Image (cartoon, rainbow, N blue to C red; front, side, top):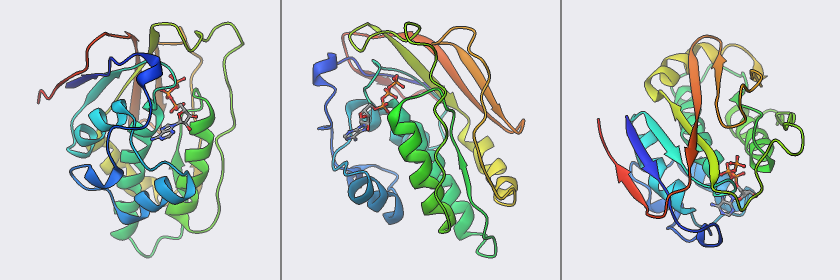
Length: 208
Ligand SMILES: Nc1ncnc2c1ncn2[C@@H]1O[C@H](COP(=O)(O)OP(=O)(O)OP(=O)(O)O)[C@@H](O)[C@H]1O
């Protein structure tokens, strides 16, 4: 598993870590249009720049970064790439499929809607917000945040089946702790959120 930590101070977690076109393996043009034109994000945040190449290279990734640093798109973009690839290889399907855990904030809903629209070409659906009660989330200035890990190879396998489900899926489990929960999607996709801390240095361990 690759571990990525993005350790800039919260105020430094701006989107200035490189353009989406600089990501290798490269993002699809559809995804770049989505990010740059629909979401208006021209640059990656540090955590996105650190994590995307790992996910796109089929690594398992655990990432720790402060809340609000852009983790959501770090894994939504790879999911979208997989779904788009599945759609390209299965042109006959007219289904929509987007998978979003709902435990995140604004980006999740926006990305879910955009992803559904991009993948299906038919309709956009937002994952409804199910934020935990106020007070259970740390303030944006705390040092605690979430981590994610997902098995992209598993996602690849799953995307074929999901392509026929004709649903935008929003699944979740109650959080045992706000920073630690597991979401299983149709027993095929597992996204783990692991408690983590904000570090002072940025590093990427590109382990196997
Ligand atoms: N590349 C980007 N450029 C500009 N804004 C971005 C970018 N990525 C994310 N954002 C914005 O930054 C904000 C925080 O992003 P996001 O919610 O994904 O952070 P997070 O690290 O997942 O937070 P949390 O830990 O609370 O889930 C959102 O308003 C989102 O729209």
